[in-house]
Image 1 (cartoon, helix red, strand yellow):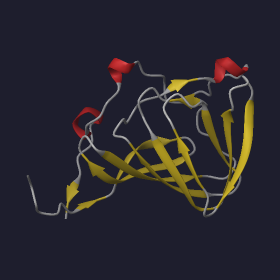
Image 2 (cartoon, helix red, strand yellow; image 1 turned 45 degrees about the horizontal axis):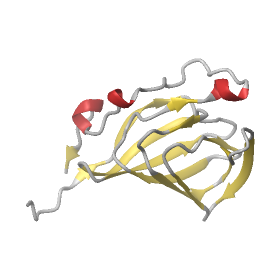
Image 3 (cartoon, helix red, strand yellow; image 1 turned 180 degrees about the vertical axis):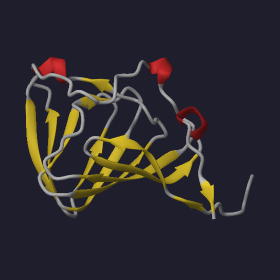
Amino acid sequence: MNTQPFFFKPTDIGPRQWGREILVAYSEGKYIGKLLKMNAGFKGGLQKHQLKDETGYIYSGEMNFYYDAGDGKLTCKKLTSGDAVHISPGTIHQEEAITDVIIFETSSPHFNDRVRCEGLYGQEIPSGGLPSSTIEEIQTTLEEVGLKLEKI
């Protein structure tokens, strides 16, 4: 067991139409933490996760959080600075930034676990959005997603 701290610089996970996604915490096989910067007026994909269990803390800004409450319709909950939401695997959800929003997200280490759900609600998948992944395609390590943490 390694008892020494590991110091690193946060790293961008990849370009996103809605803003930036920055990896700020990583413990292999245990958890990841991300800083999400969503630009006002943008939405993330309408999706669910097969394995990923996540919690988001709204650090600043306002956003609409859409989810299916079990009735086959999307419900909207407005979230503001200081609010948090837990998203269990299988929960259909989508975030829409009303203002610029900063979200701290912690989750299980499932980087690309997404099933697009727009079609279930008569919506089109926006061009350039990230695709669905099968359970076999879900990546859980930095090497699998092509990231390397820069030591400091």
